[in-house]
Length: 328
Image (cartoon, rainbow, N blue to C red; front, side, top):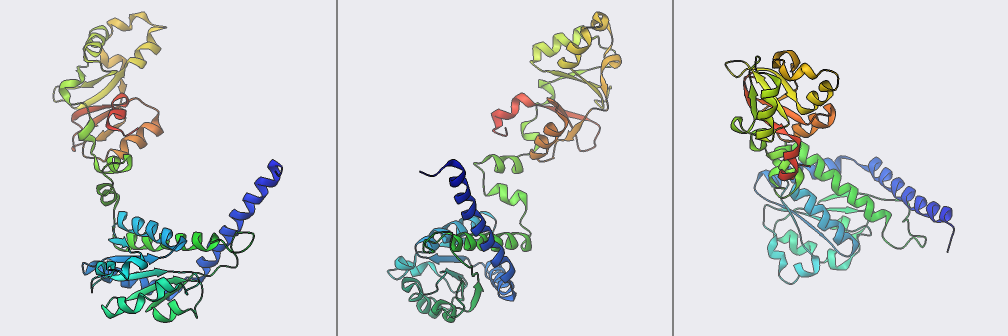
């Protein structure tokens, strides 16, 4: 077995070759890619879908490409070309577009299904590395993604080529996402079971502690009495408000511990003397993901929630509650 340094160098050489491959196809992007984007937008706007097809490693890349497209607002499916010739061609509808993946462009299982697909009136695009290939000649739109060599030492196993076409598929998906004005909220609705989905679809109001579950104190309330209420409510802070529940300040158990070490008289002082004025807050209709950003940036455990007027207290977000909503 080689030394650790030699192993690392070999791995770095593979990655460098693949980096160079992606850089190469980046420079090859031209109006054919623009034409493909326009064709996909037209298809999707007309209620059609993007059908990806490929064999072998290209098939795996195609499956991932279809999944990425579908999850980012561009309806897509993967169709295996062999199964297509035995009935799955029925997946294709006249208002669809098909994208075939083959670096060589000579994969027979793939090329022999192009004509039947086109007979259905479906436009065919392809990703290939060979402009003169059979696949390129049969396709309506040809996106070239040629690389100099594979990362395989025999220059045989699809490595750089599959990575390059994977990146090209991501480029198509992300351009379509932006051109079709796909939003974070749209993304979240397609990922309801994941933390990302919850973070971008849930509102602050969905997870905040409501007024009846928090401690609202008046400016003249004594610290000792407020602490008793905080303990009973199992709340790490008290929000100080005026008679109309307008935010004045906040007082946390951390504030108490830091101050009582040097000032035992704090227990008999009014809240207005010890509270933190102008505390950080968030509006209740904000997205939950904004909570995570604030807590991370400000290093706080309690976040005041206000009504949309930006003044009236609506609730409180306690960092201890977030794991229960699977946001942390």
